[in-house]
Structures are given as structure tokens and as C-alpha cells.
Image (cartoon, rainbow, N blue to C red; front, top):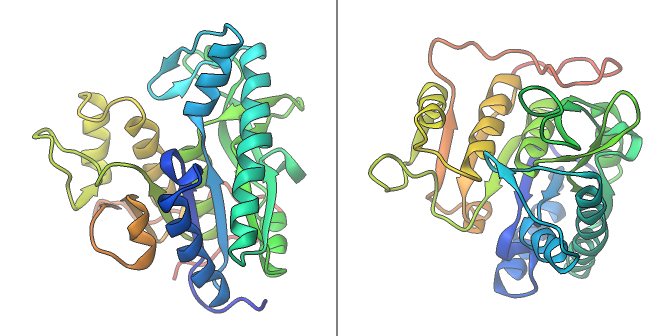
Amino acid sequence: MTSTTKTPWVVKIGGRELVPGPELDSLVAALATEHRAGRWLVVVHGGGDEVTDRAASLGLTTERHQGRRVTSLPMLEVVTEVLAGRINSRLVAALTKGGVDALGMTGVSQRLVTVTPAGTPKGSLGYVGTPRRVNSAALRTLLATGSVPVVAPLGIDSSGTVRNVNADEMAAAFAGALGAELFLLTDVEGVRGPNGRPVAELSIATARQWIRNSTAKDGMVPKLEGAIAAVEQGAVAIRIGPTALLTGAEGGTRIVADPKIAAAPPSLVSPATPSRKKR
């Protein structure tokens, strides 16, 4: 399939979209439509609930810090089993059935995502990584063949250690490196403000304030942190909300740059790939 001039999409999914049923069917249909039209697509998936259930069955306790799973070596083995194995295969099969040329992989493949230890101090979350570089040359090569990478959120650090990566942060890193539109799909209508109601638009400055004052909690924290990074690294548009956003529906929350902040060149692009010019 030949790519058109359409802006690439990076789509992060989790929750009900990962379970066979209407939400997954709607997701596959929307992505298949864009794929047939020649749009470059990258799918990043989570699957935290299934990881938690599997860990509990093995007697492992789940601990989280600001939406990130503290990951011991035994927990990393569970994360790898569930995300890179069970969920990735299930999602690739559903997309393939729907006519999408899906290619299952992790961020470890071809050093697609190089990470550094996460937490303060670094490494305090165990085997958790923060994206620092995307091998965008490898990613673009895959996309140019018509493939749709379906990426489980595991990355690799400079020593070759595999680390668990928050899926929202990984998707944001891809969007910044590709100059893409980023869709962070979630079961809620959008980002909720101090009054508990979803907001249509959110600036970087306000998003940072809501993280600091705990208006944003739990899993919304890495979503907003990833969205902020994606804007600053070159993503052209970011929306947080339900699957219907992929079909052009209104709703969700748009994350926008502050007027005083100029767009920076992508900092996560691998050295082998020239920086993308701002559109």
C-alpha cells in the first residue's frame, strides 16, 4: 500500500478496546477504513487489568505510583507474558481479520524504543523505563511497506535490559517522532477538570498545574505527561477520549501548546533520521 499525504496516526488503546466485543469491533472498523485510505497507522496497547489479574493468580501484589506499575523482575515476566504474548496476539488477530496488515511487536524490536530507568530517584520503580529515543527510521520503513505496527509497551535501555513502559508515554514518543496525530483512547469522555466535568481543550500549562495539584489522578497523570511531551516534540494534534474520536466524532479533550511555546524539533528521533520539518 502506498502512503498518502495524510498525517500519520498513533493510536493508544486499552480497557474495553482490548476485549472481544463492540468496542474492539468499532476500533477495528475505524482503523481499517484509514488503512485502506493509505494512512500510516501505529497502534500501541496497554492491558493493565489483565496484567493485574495474572499477577494476583501468581501471588504477586500490584503497586502503582502516579499511574505507573512498580515492576519487580517477577512482575516484568508477567507483564511480558500478558502484553507481548496474550494481548498483542489477540489484537493483531482481530485487526488482521478486519483487513488491516497488522504486525505484532514490542518496543524492544530493532530498539524501536530506547528507555532510561524511570522514577525519582531513577530506578526506584524497578524495571520501568521512560522513552528517550525512538528508532524512527525503522518505524518509517515498516510503515512504508503498508504494515501497521501493533506495539506492546516494552522498551530496552542502553545496557540491553528490557523495561516496562507506560503505554501512553510510548504512544506519545511515537507521535512526536513521526509528527503524527495522537489519540489516547480511554473509557471516559475526556480529561476532567476541578469540577469533575470533561473539558474540550487543555493547554500544556494547565495540564501541568492539574498534575501538580492532583486534579489529574492515577492513570490520567501519565496520559497528560505523555501528551505534553508529544506536543513539545512535534505531534500535530492530540486528543484524549473514547474510540468514537477515530471516526471524526466531536468530544474528548484536545491538548494544545501554550501560545508562548514554539514547537521544538522532535528530540526522540534516532540520529539516522533527519528531523521532520514543521508542517
